Amino acid sequence: MMSENVYDILADRGFIEQATHPDEIRELLGKEKVTFYIGFDATADSLTAGHFLTIMAMKHMQNAGHKPIALLGGGTTMIGDPSGKSDMRSMMTMEKINHNAQCFAEQFAKFIDFREGKAIIDNNANWLLDLNYVEFLREIGVHFSVNRMLAADCYKQRMEKGLTFFEFNYMIMQSYDFWKLFKLYDCTLQMGGNDQWSNIIGGVELIRRKEGKSAFGLTLKLLTTSEGLKMGKTMKGAIWLNPEKTSPYEFYQYWRNIEDVKVEECLGLLTFLPMDEVRRLGSLQDEKINEAKEVLAYEITKIVHGEEEAAKAMEASHALFANGGKSSDIPSTCYDSEKLSEGIDILSLLVDTKLAPTRSEARRLIQQGGVFVNEEKVAQVDRIFSKANFDEDGALLIRKGKKSYHLIKEKE
Image (cartoon, rainbow, N blue to C red; front, side, top):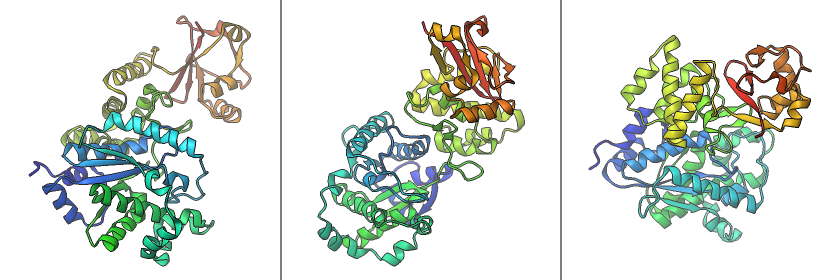
């Protein structure tokens, strides 16, 4: 008998959105070791902040003695999940999908214990890519009602613009995955983001129809802003777990600067702090909420990038915000001496440092008074900066708005 039921832990921390059979799932998780899976389509070469929430759920489950399967979507990525999307996902080459899946596998190993019997990593390309189409229709397609599929939330948004038959197969393929994992590994529970509800139900019902046995589904909260937009995105794009795509400092700063109203929720979902402490930090008011944001940013960065990188990111943040100083951990761009002697226009600097995605956006930022160099507001869009403008530390410090910093240095 396990000491504390992980279902209660997940519910208390805010993970659970929907469950097919709440009481039965809770009872099952409390009395035996359950094999469960979460699928990850390999659409990029790194996991994101959104994936991190599902990884945390997997870690809670594994810590409670259950066995996770991380299912890489080498097959389903070739189709593309239409859930919550207004346009068809662009098609990727098999080579690119395989590369991305390998990157995912390496990142999972940082978070999940894959030692013998502890967890499984598999790829649905192993069974989806060699399917016989007619056989698949006879064995699997016969169990799906088109009327019910069209009523599913995952297809509704696409019906107006046009849902291709290509994408229409996605639900059946994901359902087939669940059935296949049930047969291979006795996997009885599928978990995923709340946008996967219809797809998960499809798998639960397929197992019941084909095997006459029970299977279960549970969906997790999606990370969103107070306006309902997906959290984990900035003007520069997604917040990645790969430190080469999003530096530990940028990662730390993202969580340090989230909305006040989201602090408690993120502490519950994305850290292992006890819930008493989460609620205490979440209840802090006015300026004190910044203490909670620092704890949040440090704890998440520690899990993703390690304690040393989290400490360096926090120190860099303090150097900027508390002392007005600089730190070697602030993102920087280096130019050669010749280029710096000639001078570089401010629009190029903003684009090169990715503080602005385009020159026109950079121009708009300057015109709105949001760009500072060495704490002096930049008023002219054609302003040139050179080595002569460097401060006593031998750098230019560009600030966009209140919280985005970047150092310009000379190549050594």
